[in-house]
Every structure is written in structure tokens, then in C-alpha cells.
Image (cartoon, rainbow, N blue to C red):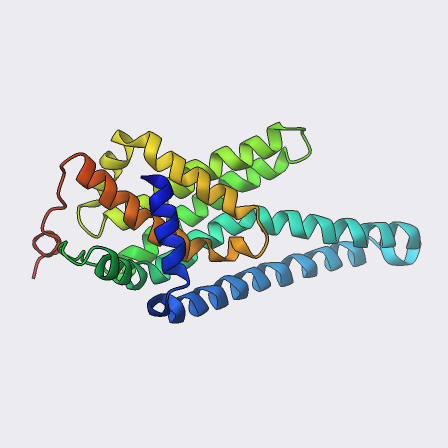
Length: 239
């Protein structure tokens, strides 16, 4: 089921129907990463100037320049999962609606969460993801353990966030969370796929849109496999 869902999600990412959302999600992702990069570089420059590293230790200044560049790249990789979740909060419903309409035309459509609720949920979880990844960054140089911590933490966090956001179009959030827990192996496997995508340059920029499309398919597959049809989303949201 997961392989079929991944293939379908990848096809959707580059489909004409999702092309406008793809460009907007890429633009927002790059803008957020550029903002983080700008802030971190200014922080490093301030630190060097305040400690007179450039004037007193020119060799150390050159070494610090290269180390800072490497450190910034590593930091951005660890920050990207949180950025991905935040971006997904902006485009979830538009993208999910297209995937549902094109790949599941005979199913009742989902209903979007209120924009404020959706963004609050995404911001809250992005903050948790950022905190967890900063903790993982502290053990980056520990062989094997650092990479394993990054991969494992993000596989869980991404699977939880993307699946629950996709499922919440059809059921209350607490029921979506319960459905995820009862199908932990499937959702976590999907999260592993997203976490692996995070470490591939360029491809990782597609994670928000791919994650949405993937989890729409995973949720639909779980509901059908367990003979658990989605409840009437319109009735859940009210008039």
C-alpha cells in the first residue's frame, strides 16, 4: 500500500492541477530558509566582531568562516523538518482537496479545518519539531547515534503531523490521532519515507506537498483496509 501511495503522491506533486501550489510551497519554503540563514549569519558575524576574532586572530577568523558555513548547512538540514510542517499548514487543504478529487472521485470530499486552527496546529507542531531537532543537533558528531536520532525523531514527528492533518479533514483531531496510533506501523513507515526525503538536497524542498499527497493516500488506504469509511465531514464541521 505504501509504495503505491508514494508513487501516486509523487505523480500528484508534478501534476498540472498541483503545479501552482508546488511553486507557492517552494517559494515559501525557500523564503523561510533564507530568513533563517540571514539571521544565523548575522548572529555569527556579531559574535566574531564582539570577540575581536577578525582583528586579533586572522587565521582563526578564516577557519571560523569555513566552519560557520558548514555549520549553517547542517543547521538548515535540522531546521527543514519544522519549516516543512509550517509550510504544509498553509497549503494542506488546497492540496488535499485536489488529491481527493482526482484520485478518489467517488469518495465524499473532506472538509477543511478553520485556517486559524490549521495554522495554530502547524505552528505548535513545528515548534516541537524544531526543539527536538535542536536536541538532535547537539549529538550530530556522535557516530551513528546523531544520524539515527535525526532520522528516528523526524520519522515519528512527520508521520504524526502529516497524517493527522490529512485525517482531520474527515474526523475530529482526537479520532485522527487514535487512528494513527492504531496503525502506527503504516504511518511510521510513511514517516520514514519523508525523513529520508529530508536528507536529499533539492528533493527535500518537495516534502510539504509530497507529504500532504502521501498521507491523503495513506489515510484513505487505512480507512478502506479497516472497513472504516470516513464519517460525513460536513456533519462534523457543522453548517
